[in-house]
Image (cartoon, rainbow, N blue to C red):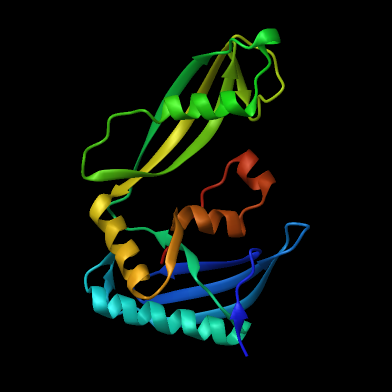
Length: 214
């Protein structure tokens, strides 16, 4: 007998050119991830990360998710979906705000404001922002700060990396998943998701290139 997925049970959907993979994972209180269900299906409706046949993509998603559900013994309603393809582009941007709070202490709200300001860039109408990734923060010209919360300063800057994708490519992923009876919780750039899976914090700090050959 199956049950509905709990809040700590997360579903990832990898939409590849050769196969579609669904993974159901359980997040523990300590942050550890335990894989409890895996399903795959030949990908017949995608080419180079882009949906080219909606019905075939829907069928492949359904098969992969059902296989993962059977292994995990649960029924899922929503997924985090991967997005990739040669339509993906990225740019660097910078935002700056004044910290006017008494004592000039920087808060999470200031972080959100400066990141929002950094992503307020002009992009073509046929593209949408997928990720805004903070690279570093600068407090009163002091560079290399990863987390400025609690620090004092009057000028806060953020260097961010903005990832964009084609609006229609994202829309077709949403449509495929929704027609498969699921809700998209968020789109995640697939190489970025891979980096979280295989790179540790020390490697990221030292600098490393992750090559996904597909």
